[in-house]
Length: 368
Image (cartoon, rainbow, N blue to C red):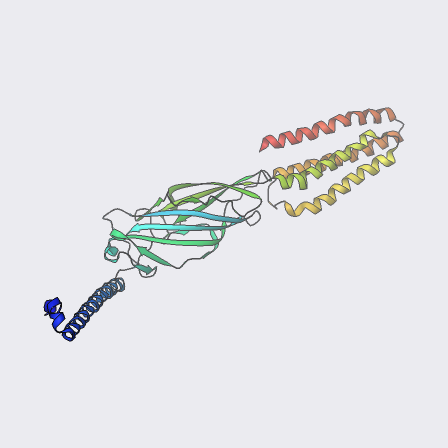
């Protein structure tokens, strides 16, 4: 019928019939197109609904770890250090921002490729940092399921982490900051951690912390025995190297202290007969040193052992005090009419004190 309507001969003889036939053809084609789109849309909706229904049909015990025969579950852990904003000497802690990525295989989740689940609906290894103080998560808590039951859990934390602070070489110290990760729910015979070399590391840009230089990141996986639980656990250690910028302490503390010590040596160049100015200069040097120590005590960490800075301050204080004792001794010798001995003593001290001070500095340098 459609072919007859399109014939030229028929069109010439019956134009109205031809017009009606063409309109009917166009209407039929439009109807077919709409029906096809509706069918495709229905198929897409059905597929989407099927995917959603697959994710909703999850029925897996979240308290039972995935089995791999007799082998322990292998969890790949990667730690990316994003920023270090503060290192607290007294509190022995750092403020750190890092991301941790955990991956493992759960064959029970193979049918749920592409699904995302809240962490309380599936099994997760519960790998946490051992030496945390206060950490807060920044991302939503969910896992992603990939092909063949490969599960990924990504989270970012920001907060404080404690570490073993060693400041014997302060202010020229280098700190080894260790972040230890393990799962206390499963022993080493049930769960093994593996370092994710592609993810573990630090960002390439500089960190925000002003007085430290943060170096490269190194990792180590070992077994840790916990006597309280009587079991061994797989542990991943991520170590940061932090070198203190010592220029601030050199110019704000040590250099002014050197000037005060050198100032105290001026008494050796004043004639012992003028013991009044000599003792006055020594006392002034001692009082200046005490005032300086009070003003700078806040920048030195309070520890139960001596640092390089502490030894330098104590030795400088001793030299200034000895210069005061020498001035008093010279005045005493003048009073006893032994001026020659006082002059010779001043001459010896002019060289002995600088040599002793230089030896102190060299000794502390090589003690580092």
